[in-house]
Image 1 (cartoon, rainbow, N blue to C red):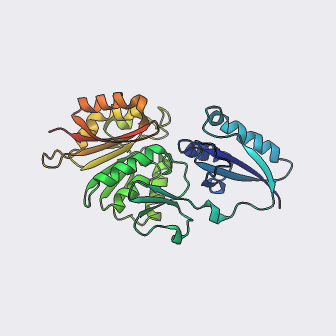
Image 2 (cartoon, rainbow, N blue to C red; image 1 turned 90 degrees about the vertical axis):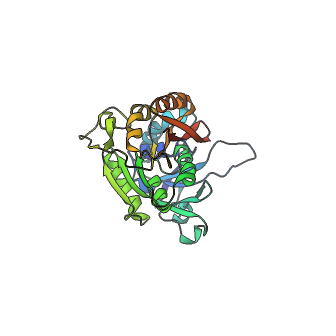
Image 3 (cartoon, rainbow, N blue to C red; image 1 turned 90 degrees about the horizontal axis):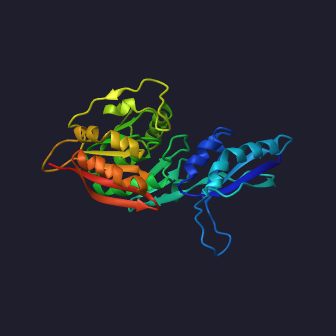
Length: 315
């Protein structure tokens, strides 16, 4: 059987969005991602090459046009190349889907189908399946979050992963020895988190709940202001040693007081909050809101325009 192969190059920032958009047309597991290989000596912003396949029949061209239209906003803004097409007899092999993606000093992220021999002995392996949830482990906001988590998580901590997405941060926290409440108001993300927790065998350390913290139950879905179902409000006071929240700036600002109330007030070991999910354009507004709520910034990680901050509760 012949196939119409569609390929494009994309960035760290866009790979999640490409997968999400393509899932409207094809099975997410039929998207193949490999490391980008430069074709010449020129510098490039591309990080990954994505491939997908359509049966080469009378409807192939229509399918290509539909996918091109879906991805056109990302192409227009320079986050992907134009789609290239080619007629092939075989799809890419499963082996070439495998990615080993080092992050920080301690982590590697691998696809669930990556061979065990590809893992690195002295690294913490985080296994991840492709999902529709934001935070595949490839987005810069996730990367800077992981860099800070590896510095501040200690065994036996009680941690809240607020806006758990794919669950990759919850798994990382658990593999560093802490206990985690993974919280998200999106049912797709809750399912993805649970699957990622199970895939990584950390069910004993991670509890996954659909809901939100404090006034977050009134803010709506992370992609809009609407929720399909009522969102449960999780009451938490002096509960957590650390909160990590990889979410939009507007949610950080709205929940500043709720974050402070949920953290343990211990003068010997003040509660910590790691905020991410926003760019430098929003850094000042997030920092101002959290300072007014009683936090101070003690650490920072940046990748391109994306930023993650560690805040400490003032006594």
